[in-house]
Image (cartoon, rainbow, N blue to C red; front, side, top):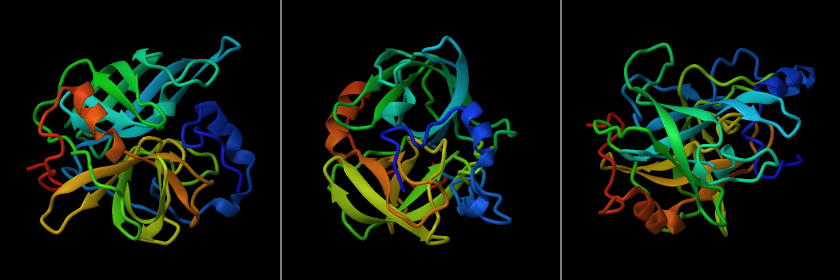
Amino acid sequence: MIRLPGAARLISMSAAIAAVGMSTVLATPGAAQAVANGTPVAEGQYLFSTKLTMTNIPRADGTSYDSACSGALVAPQWIVTAGHCFHDTSGNRVSGPVPYSTTATVGRADLAATNGYVVDVVEVRQASRHDVALAKLATPITDIAPLPVSTTTPQTGAILRMTGWGATSSVSPTPSSHLQAGQFKITRVAGTSVMVVGYAPAANTSACAYDSGAPYFTENPDGTQSLVSVESDGPACPHSQEETTSRVDRLADWIQQTTGTSGGTRPHPGRNGK
């Protein structure tokens, strides 16, 4: 499977429509979830999970398109996501004022619900040598506990959970209207990347289009959680091959300095944010 460098999980809505002509061998009959072969997240779970909606993204030819990414609240006014979610017309990652209109939906598992927040994104900071970015919200969210960032090296064999707003399949992909989750196993750690494969509910549980930036995090026996990596790139979904995620333990100091947080990596107090 050919991997597209740094953008396989961020595609335009028009490209999604064009994908109808792809072979349906990748589809899962009866599947209704995003995060291919995942499970729906109940309202009140994983409140830090974030849907990023981008509109009027400019192309070099003067046209524009809409797209989406996933992410997680890591500080009251900051979302972590994939660096390639914010780019110029040549596809180069950009820092500074947000390059196109972007909103963050936080603390809501279903887009039809009215709980949680929908906040404009106003600024982007790119990590060097990692496909990771921090997106600044126009106003802070103070009643949802951020997801702490791990400072320890990811371990092969560890089980992580991922939450995302991506598509069900690479065939005619569209962003989900309901947050989905799945579990993954770390197969190896290579430089800035953490490679994972599907673990539960199926071996081919996998990230899909619009899952770029989705958080992969530990769920510890005491109920705490910590961010290990974010979704970057992978094969067409659903699949049982390795997925590339970008590790964050080496970025913990940068994240703390950028977001102005202290205390760094206190554990998250469980999935319900209480």
